[in-house]
Length: 211
Ligand SMILES: Cc1cc2nc3c(=O)[nH]c(=O)nc-3n(C[C@H](O)[C@H](O)[C@H](O)COP(=O)(O)O)c2cc1C
Image 1 (cartoon, rainbow, N blue to C red):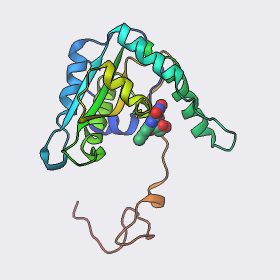
Image 2 (image 1 turned 180 degrees about the vertical axis):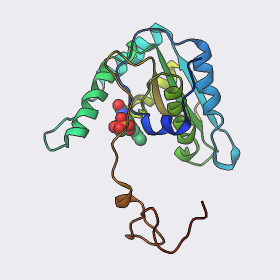
Image 3 (image 1 turned 90 degrees about the horizontal axis):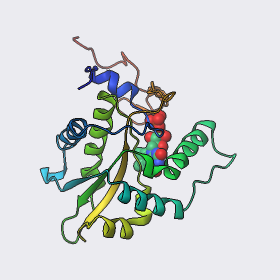
Image 4 (image 1 turned 90 degrees about the vertical axis):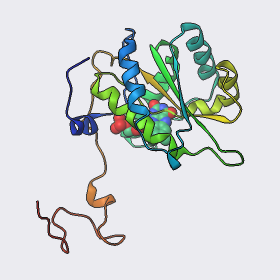
């Protein structure tokens, strides 16, 4: 196991990694990711999740065939440079998906007559992303496998009442690929205090911290 990093260092530096070394990922590390996944909360504690670890080169090749046949990202000049970079990287990943050593497909089982609950799988997916960062691995949340839901379910023998929710590529980051810090909108823009529009600021009036 690699040296442990602080939880907040992992949160602050976890970012989308889309370029990977071809090196295999030891089973112990994959197992740690899965253990982290199942520590997540789920609605009603139902744990309707499942995670398929895909390493077989033939299966990855078949998934690669699906991705190559699918729609490509539209990287228009109207997009910001940050989004253009992300789409460029995302397209590279899809063009090379079969070369990623491990793919984890996160799925959820829906109760009869209900729609599958994203809220009950994405906490587990986020745990995998953070655990990967903690173990020196890279990953990125992707959802575009939904374009081939029928084909992927057939390929992997996934039951009818189970839906694929995210495909996580897992591997060691390629040379020259770095973790964050990530760039995000400032807190004042997205966090409010007491009511919509009142920017949250450390030390906002109305509350005295005892720390
Ligand atoms: C719902 C959702 C779907 C996403 N789908 C994809 C995807 O299909 N391909 C991809 O490369 N990244 C995908 N991402 C990752 C985002 O593009 C990424 O979080 C964003 O670019 C920020 O990147 P950063 O964490 O590296 O700053 C997705 C993220 C979310 C939350």
